[in-house]
Length: 220
Ligand code: SAH
Image (cartoon, rainbow, N blue to C red):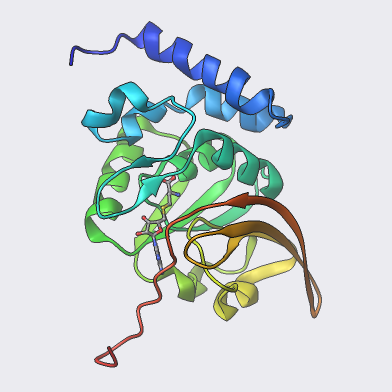
């Protein structure tokens, strides 16, 4: 495949934002602006370049996917982020969602359990420069206690429930957005922590790869 010209990818990206995102009801200008800027084609494998701006999730290796653009937009809007907001993301994957959060002005902390994906995202985000983003390799279901509390937490892998450490590391008054369900079908929930209460509303049906909880030494 030949090289994609910059103008071509710019045009595809603006098209994506208008047709897949704004037209479906995402109205947060900060999110729309961020997604018009972040070069999504850089976050997909070369073999997927031509599909980078298509209306779907794409495989990025290791059995995981970069989420559909609309789902990234919808979850970022639900999270309500902006400058000065500290966000923890679980499941860095390609780094695209982290880049979108960074481009919204948030201070981003993101955890990935697969070393190769972590390294690749680290290199790419360094090169592209999408704001203030710190990455860590490890089991995100334990959160990032040294950097807690977080104003927002975004889980981008599916689980039947929100792991307790994440609830604990959310600041009072904070929001947590996560796809909750089984391996096949989940609903995006937005939780709000208010003192001892942790209540949620349901947003939309989605399908993410599972959150894998590494069970520690030798227990299988
Ligand atoms: N946000 C990503 C897509 C997420 S795919 C993007 O923008 O590209 C889900 C990711 O979660 C995968 O990369 C998977 O390896 C990772 N993951 C699954 N369980 C995890 C865990 N316990 N801790 C950290 N990352 C995890």
